[in-house]
Image (cartoon, rainbow, N blue to C red; front, side, top):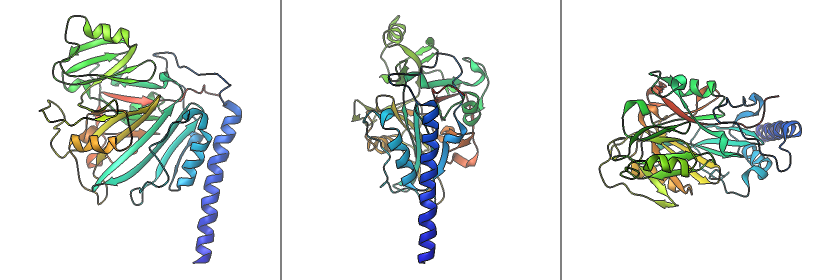
Length: 338
């Protein structure tokens, strides 16, 4: 037993050392200069992430070493991830870290539901993006999130609102208003500065109101699904009927949340291993609210709910069969390729 413990300790120490050396060696060659912010031009293809900076571990000490390395990027913000989280049995934590982006994923079991989280901190708002399958609105093409993420050079990608399945809400893409049907669903807008802001169903319905909102708030894109789960740090309970998402049924869920400035938390819930329970929208709201987010919004769930990194899914997708879809939200590195 003592010999086994010594071997485990040696392996753990080596893993921490390798992770530290990886990020430190990267930092010495491509570290952000003091006061410099890399901004990716709108509509330009993002730089490819450095493959050497992706990793996977079961050791919280490895993740903590990356967090320590990212102190400047984090700007003193508190993470939802911490070393004391009770993670799902036999699950791993995946990560990516450079000077412009930190990504940590992990899995928990909450009330017998398998819950996957991905926490992202960015250096600049231009690193938060949306991609449409086929590259244009209403292309008629659908692709898997893993494929769209790889094509866009995403560090991490998240399934979106599946806009071409329905004609509801306000749809903005690359600053252009494509759909303006705000009466029945809440809409989440994403600004050039990297913030998520909301309009409630029934708002922005007057002539020119949606376009004025887009211009006044520097909106780059939007997603239309909902409902809003958390707003200004306050949990919202959905009691009315809602036209999408089967909100009161037991279902796999997808949620995007903003915790702080340029700080996002993604969440999917579903079935994995012996953890079989699916949840309602209000339960999803409680789960994400408990992580300390300021804003949270529901995206298309069920088999659509997908978190993807490096061409593979992070969460278990329903029926183990990744679905083709119309769009993703994704996060990229701002470090120029060598």
